[in-house]
Length: 115
Image 1 (cartoon, rainbow, N blue to C red):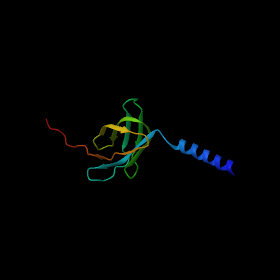
Image 2: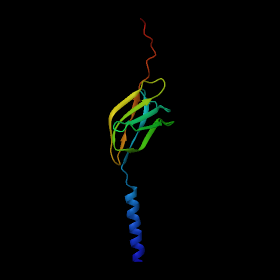
Image 3: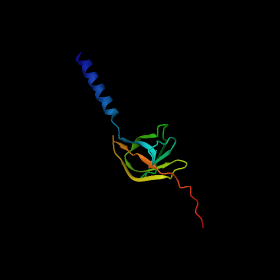
Image 4: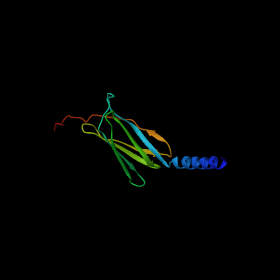
C-alpha cells in the first residue's frame, strides 16, 4: 500500500509540474463604436523581439483568443473591411497571465475629398 501511495504521489507531482506553462494568452472582443460585435475581423499579433506572428479571426460573437504565446512584447493589429485598421503596441505577455484587450474599431470615412 505504501508503494502504491508513493507511486501515486510521484505521478501527481509529475503531472502538476508538466501542467505548468511558460506561456501567456491574449483574448478580447472586437466591436464597432456603437458596441455591435464584429465577426470575421483579422487579428495579427507580432512578437517585436522575434518577429513571430500569431493570427486568428474573431468568432461569430466578435471574440478572439491567441493562446500559448511566448513571453515577450507584442504589437496587436486588427483589420476588417469597412473599418480603420487598429494597432496597439507595448503589449507585454507574461507567464500564465491572460491579457484582455478589447478593441473598438471605427468605420472608415466614405467621404471623397473635393479638390
